[in-house]
Image 1 (cartoon, rainbow over the protein chains, first blue to last red):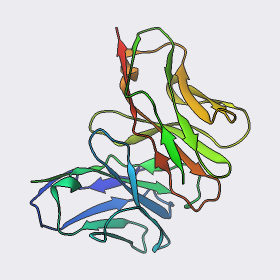
Image 2: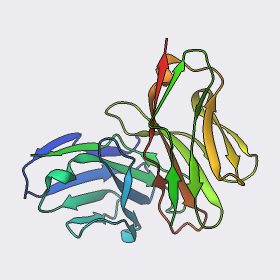
Image 3: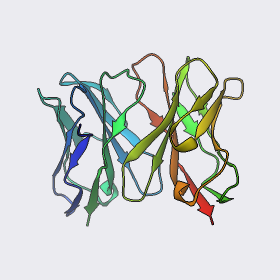
Image 4: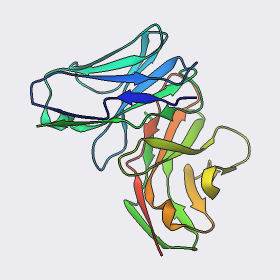
Length: 113
Length: 114
């Protein structure tokens, strides 16, 4: 059974550009959460989606947006990229939002130059 | 608001010795507590969780953690460290309402020396 898959694995973008990151949850999992991990820090919560609806949002600017599709996969979009957006972006899936734990993907490493 | 503190940026231990990685937390209500491990250029790998019940929780790869409600701590332990345990360890907490996200500490780098 496949785990949480994220694409792409690595990405280099220029300041001001837009980026879309993708996540496919474990089969049967209906909730997806996105985290940003800046080098040397712990993951910071960005969004949680369940049944295509936003269930929570962290302290991130409106340049960050996300959505969940009917097949429960998800996209994270970041507009007007800044150097400070360089990070590892992690997707986690769970059966339900309130589940005891999440399963994380390997992440997308975004570098903004 | 929920928060997690991992007071040590780095923990060094000799192979074969016991290891402890410290974690304290703050949460409204009852906590759900987790430990994750991260190897270089990888995502987070689940080690163990405390939801309710026995305060001593056993997890993957010989790791265990002890929940201490009075000290609001959830320290990660292993009786005998391996070089392969060297990695970045994250403690995380959420409350039991189901309406809050998982909040992580800043991480502790464990280095096991042969």
